[in-house]
Length: 116
Length: 107
Image: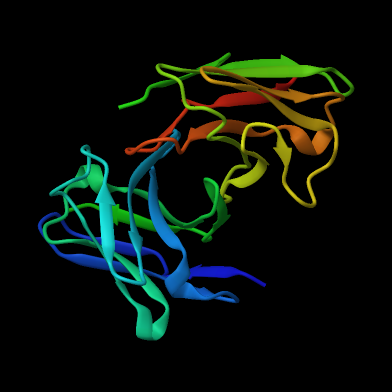
């Protein structure tokens, strides 16, 4: 079975760095794009960007370009979403998702809270 | 960017009702559209892909139609487990964009 398992909840202070993860299993990880999607509390879904683990090609939404970094380590079938300096406005749930004719599988979500 | 305008933003309906949700794209996206259901605290789940294809395991009361700029998700007979928020997603061109969501509530 295809599974995307994300890292757990994080509580950070503004200005701190953070890297959350998404481990794929049950399929050939290098053959499918992985996306990251943000959902702020009580709000809709926002596509942040995606990565092709086979060659690490990435595409970012203009809204998130320069704000986050998407990467992958194909040796351990894991994709990452990273911030160098968190803001309170980064507080949200973050989902990873596999891309097949849109999105077919989702991770369970990683809640991130940024508060002083 | 392609804007996806979803309507209505919310609706109240009874069990057994027929429900229709619409997404309009700001430019033609062929049939590069999916529909997703999200329940509180959970990840979204795909219902429809390529505008009109039912995802495996999804009940046949869900259907999708449309092409180009106008798309519809229909629930033929609303069931208690269908009360949720529904989103469309266009994957025709980057950046991919979601509709704003439609919350289906119990009347």
